[in-house]
Image (cartoon, rainbow, N blue to C red; front, side, top):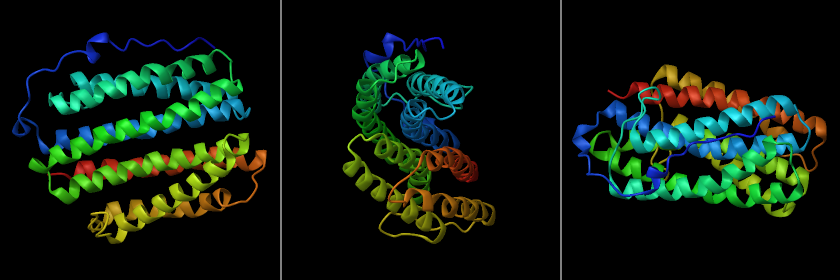
Length: 284
């Protein structure tokens, strides 16, 4: 399969522009920026998961195609966060602190995308998998900082609880992929004890946040969801989660379990993504 090529323009890593006043950004635009910046967190984990599925020989061609498309979307979105992207619905927010943080993400992305290229050319060596395991979390952490910066900035546009809700609902998408990645790392034998512990923590975060989105969680800053359509969507997510959770809690997983996990995590992600978009669309 052809190596993935990117044109992440070098101008993303240079000087800041003038600060755009918060009042120049609509509520809907700010909601979309939080949404898609949050989605980037998920894409870091989805790419890592897809690399590991390829390494395990699970639906290799399909996951190569997924990996290729996921990486293209990550690259397009980071450029859109810098410059705006009408196709994605992103507006340019020239806040110097956000731009500086996006520069950090772009620099880490340059290193991580080498793993993507390498895997797409057929190399799934232990060295490549270890690099993927080491590099994906710094990329996720720095991208998460961007989302929090957008959330703080949104307080002049959105109700504070809505910014938090969009952020944490969006984070749920990432957790669906992170827990699958951690399951695969355990199965492959990369820091199995540490990744088993991380998997348990990720599952707890997902379950607690889902409960908070539904019924409220003062500590998380979630007021609960009273819009019937969004509540129904979250209940669908809960139903899918209840199907997926038993595989994640097994003491030992077989290849067949990993295949099932690869099948169940995507509907969970898809339905959670629908919930996030419903929150964004509800912003008036």
